[in-house]
Image (cartoon, rainbow, N blue to C red; front, side, top):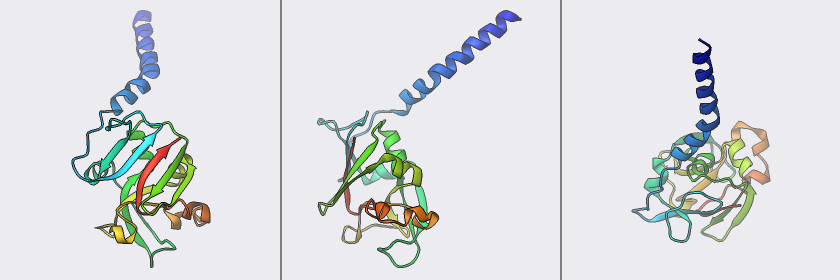
Amino acid sequence: MLRTALISAVILLGQMLLGPLLNAAFALEPLAAPSGAVVLTVDGKIALHNTADGKAAFDMAMLQALPKTSLKTSTIWTDGVQSFEGVRIADLLARLGSEGTEIKAFAANDYEIRFPVSDASTYGGLIAYLINGAPLPVTNKGPLWIIYPFDSDPALQVERFQSQSVWNLETMTLY
């Protein structure tokens, strides 16, 4: 009886100690190469990449294959409440095995901003690729737009988060 309890305790301890490591190792499946046009490149502190220069390149289908999240919010750039769909920044970074603490986001129009990863993960930062069920056009903030659920928390309705709402997003570097 004591021997069985001891064996059970050793197995449980092993699962507690090795489980997170094994889960992390299996979560980092190889990142496929994009087959379509690249819409987002991520570099810096990432564990996975699919380019020779250590970057993770995503086409739209790859982004859409990641866990989807939807949110409804108004913004200072749109009329009324809009419905956005995309991938949470936290989910994208987890997929890449990133341990970065800061993001530098670059837009096609040369806008760039550096902000804490914790802002995106704490407040549900989303890389949106759909608005009201339709793709975001390049001529109107697309194809990717970092968006926050502004209506859900007054803390988000300040310049700090509005400036992180990068539209025409092309690249993110993790520090």
